[in-house]
Length: 124
Ligand SMILES: [Ca+2]
Ligand SMILES: [Ca+2]
Image 1 (cartoon, rainbow, N blue to C red):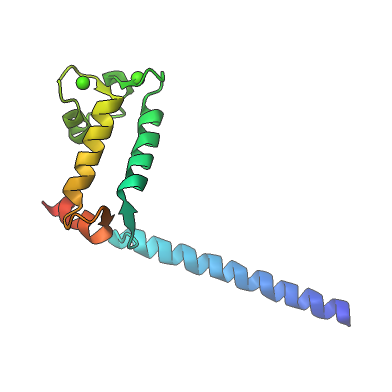
Image 2: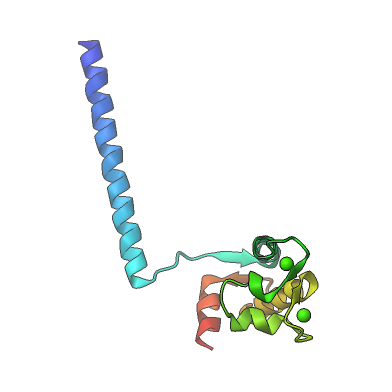
């Protein structure tokens, strides 16, 4: 009797969590469909750190420079980081460029970029 009850509860639990997953998946699919991005706040430090990781990923031969062959696709924003226009983005050009980009998005200059600021800067 006891065992049966536990099994029944476990089965119910499994059933419910399966349902929950489905609901979450559907919610995610709906969100993707309308291009919804959950509200977020990004600090300058976090942004810098994630851009640093991005640089390391792009710099496949780890020579602290992103060369044309390391760029996934022609990208106007990344090209603009190349201040001396030698076709190579150095680690310094990258960090200055990405932080300047962050500062342009940080409309109220409080050191964080909210999803609203991000959306607003995309419109400009
Ligand atoms: Ca490189
Ligand atoms: Ca350069």
